[in-house]
Amino acid sequence: MIVGKLKDIARYKGISKNIDTAIDYVLTHDLLALPKGKTVIDGDNVYVNRDTYVARPLDECYFESHKNYLDMQIVLKGKEGFGYTDITDPGLVITSAYDNVKDVTKYANKAKDEIYITLEEGYALVFPEDVHLAKLDVDGKTIEKAVIKIKLDK
Image 1: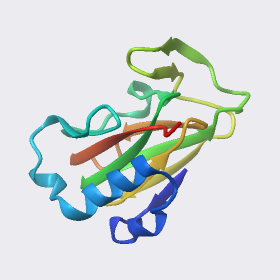
Image 2: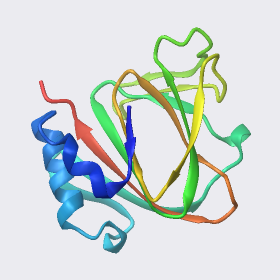
Image 3: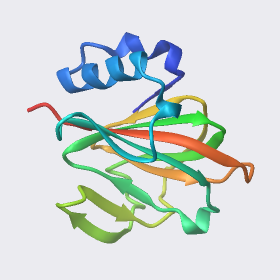
Image 4: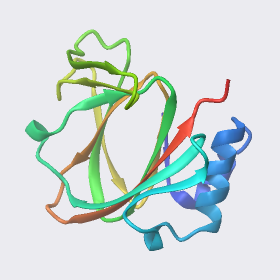
């Protein structure tokens, strides 16, 4: 997992073609101006889901992982709690088996070795081994967010 501020995101160019496409888009577009919902950047290789919401208490959140896409979770305005653990965490409990259509496995909101951070107008780039929990409330305020889905380069 890579966590940082958008001003520094260009340093991660070169990891893969699709990540480069996502970074270039972030650097050249106003993500706050995007309409709510899905915006296609490069077919099914790279797209963004734009949302506005009030985050939830921990008991309404869950961990998740993906097999075919990376998530670039970007908090554009506000702040939210964000949990992380490695896919090998022995405390992970699957609550919904892998859904091939949605590319997601869901887990309970507790693990053994999870770590929580606050994303405040920054991003987290999560890879398939990065089991993550998003939309965790820290202050009860509205959050503006973009999640860029980045297909793994084969």
